[in-house]
Amino acid sequence: MVENILIEKLLQNDRRTVARAISAVESGSQASIELLKELYSKVGGAYRIGITGPPGAGKSTITNQLAKYYRLRGKTVGIIAVDPTSPYTGGALLGDRVRMNEIGQDPGVFIRSMATRGSLGGLSRKANDAADILDVAGYDFILFETVGVGQSELDIAQATDTTIVVLVPESGDSVQAMKAGLMEIADFFVLNKSDRPGSEQAVTALKTILMMKDHDQFSWLPSIIKSVAIENTGIEEIAGEIIKHNNYLIKAGKFETKRENHVRNRIKEIVEDQIRKKLWSDDGEKSLNNSLEKVVLGNLSPYHIAEEIIENFRKQL
Ligand SMILES: Nc1nc2c(ncn2[C@@H]2O[C@H](COP(=O)(O)OP(=O)(O)O)[C@@H](O)[C@H]2O)c(=O)[nH]1
Ligand SMILES: [Mg+2]
Image (cartoon, rainbow, N blue to C red; front, side, top):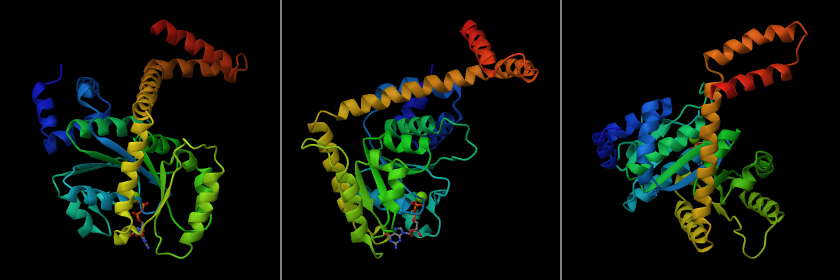
């Protein structure tokens, strides 16, 4: 049983409790799993937005501006930055401390950075668990900033209600994005740094690629919004497009199915994580080491050993 007082404090958005709960879910402790189980009936109020794209495209700047935009309208914002180079440290945006401090010290904003390096998988589980904590604490919007490289980062950005892909006018950016799988996950695009030359050409190139995708009159066609995030230009349009996309999901009856799909993926991930953990516990590693000799001596193939390990694991269950 999880202490009621802890849940009470989370529901009241007690900052220290929220921070501690997020650290706990990051560790993946059994206690945190019990907490997440108990909280789940209260999850679902927050609108989740993924902001992804290549390094340096302006994701942090857009996240920052969008958070300020929502704050000015009385909404609260949780930010989960899954970006090793993300300049949110201690609630401050490096090189831009003043601006970030404004939102970093705002009690209506909660910023959490998550390390990607050195984390032994489970990144997407951790990000989603942390978002559940923020959701229960009552944040209206949860913004996930992730670099659009690497499968788990794409997974995180996609496991949201609306996914925004941020690109810049540099030639070939949209081709790179296509290769990185960003085209498939975008609900809409933001062409940031539109103060730079080539932004019109970049929009045209992007449109051409988008029109090549299968679509009919019922499809949601991702639009392209130009922004200059450092000047706060285009932020209102981004917020507007998020609402438009949300309305589309609801009208088309896709909102619930989208969330159901995310839950399905999450369950799979939890099951796989836990099986992997159990499988390669001390005993699993030991029996693998013992069996290796048989492969080295040439008696058995890796497939033989794998079958043996699976059979032993099955017996343990
Ligand atoms: N010229 C220009 N620079 C920008 C714009 N938006 C962000 N930047 C700058 O681009 C750099 C990278 O931005 P950041 O938000 O950290 O990118 P991220 O790596 O995608 O999170 C920073 O120096 C920003 O100040 C923009 O619209 N125009
Ligand atoms: Mg960043």
